[in-house]
Length: 126
Image (cartoon, rainbow, N blue to C red; front, side, top):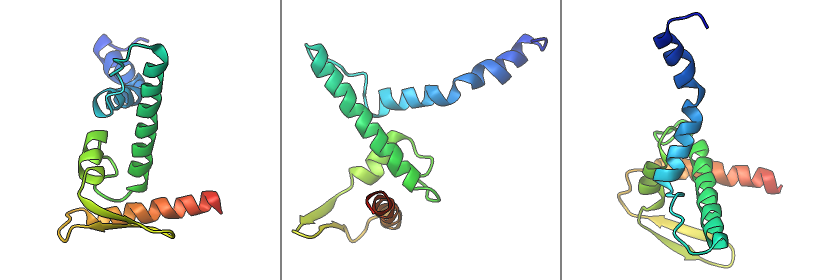
């Protein structure tokens, strides 16, 4: 590499791990996957497995949110705005009904994401 050192750093070194570093940061800060405080290895391994499953679920939700304001949201924002929202859930033999509050600022986005997730699941099962 014959470019100046600052250009090599900016163009090559910084870019090489940008995406993977962001994913690791989301896992550690958003899901708290680095919290492995159990006494046994198996318990810590299970905690890490659950954290990875939660992260994959949130990535799936973010992928289904394409075209909305949540398409590029980081994991903590997805948790706070979409998952931790108040709703009434009614389960019957045939369906699960989720009733949002009368004023839900992200109701349209939630419906859109839910429809995309349901339709993609129908493609997988069908």
